[in-house]
Length: 137
Picture 1: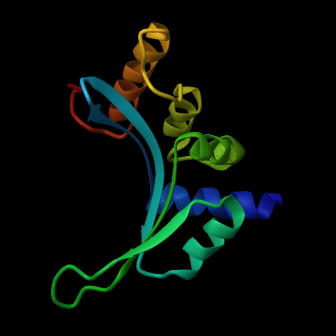
Picture 2: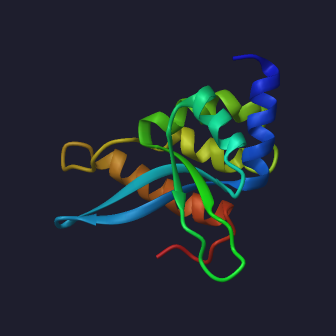
């Protein structure tokens, strides 16, 4: 992958993408998941992201009259971190979110890894703040 590809992808993700850490309840434990997502009504740029980084591409049907089909590219967890590390130096708008995502400990929270569980929750709070979302719960 060349610098032009990285610069293009970073600009596209800065403008159209989102980097999130989301909580989910698994059995009786609170877990967190990392995702890099880009949505667009034009499929070709998302095909390019798939060819550069892998991930999943899927479509959503139009929601409402006059709307167009939406294409979504998504890469999650362990697969998202190398993408964000590669793009980090080229990102401007989402560089802070990428930094948080690259230190986010991937994997299940367990009693064997209490520090990882604490770091996951702190990364979640930091990401909410970086994304301009209200106070973390």
